[in-house]
Amino acid sequence: MRIYFRKIWRSIALSFPILYIFLSKKHILYVVGGIFLFFCILDILRLHIKEWNNIFLKVFSCILREKEKKSLSSTTIFLGVIFVSFALFPKPISILVISICVIGDIFSSIIGTKYGKIKILANRTLEGTISFFISAFLTALVFNNFLHLKFNTIVLASVFSSLVELISPLILIDDNISVPLLTGGVVWLLR
Image (cartoon, rainbow, N blue to C red):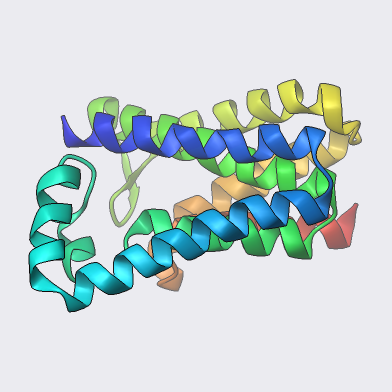
């Protein structure tokens, strides 16, 4: 059940690329940066004040992984990645890669966990990887109504992000960091 709560929570992050469609880079960086700063302060306080951490863990136990109980939350880390992506990459590419990361992660995790039978690497399944690709591709097509990217850019982003998500356990970089940043870099260089 925890996986569903985590994915519902993660889907809120899709609001940032949608908002960025209508805002300037400067304004979206203020919004994401402010929220990121708030979550950083919250994490630092809860990690240094035991009582706050106990309250935090009770409230958010349905979305936290075990490793997040004594470190920065994945939400804080992902907000930092969104900020870096928006700051670093051109607007269409950053919107594309964050959208792909959010939707692809949700579908690959749920499908891979529930229906995944064919293990590929570490805890990754063929079914999860295929669902990541399909959802990434469809997400890119939908967002392309606003982004006006070339079709080959959409295919490249979908394929590359699926591969990065698949090999993330091997390269020892959290997929919430590796997928948007590596995909954004490759798409930016090869567009």
